[in-house]
Length: 220
Image (cartoon, rainbow, N blue to C red; front, side):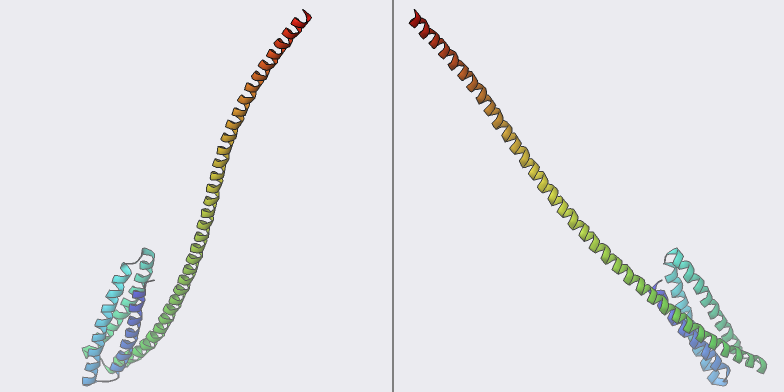
């Protein structure tokens, strides 16, 4: 819920209760004193109208689900304000007889008590909602911090895994290089062995020929 709307709402509830008490007080007096009180009440009604307009503008700028709830509440406030305006018009007409005056006085006292009770209830409800909103904000902030810590931990793990993969890749690359070098060494050794085999075979053949010649000349 909008904090701005709730601020206007508290001001309106306090003003509404004050106007109800002033209406009750105006019914108990007469003459210039009554006119003065009615003038004060009318000035207060203008302030109440201004608060109603501000609440209406603020409510219409909110999300649809919140706006619907606040506009329904605003209709109740407008109805209360219209009742106050009607009562002030009746007091200002000057045509009230004693019975009507007593009736308005009793109604005004009842309205004053009802308005005060409603005001206390609304303020208690508003305070409770603010406390609940504060708790939800704290929970959201705590969840956000926990999520942030988890994200940092995951990033650190990913970084470590990346370093491990890079190290493994470098190790495998080194192994490949070593295998290539070993293969080249073995190939060279194989060639040398084959060459040595041919050399030894040639030497053996030469020795056989020489020995055969020696034996031939001796036996001849």
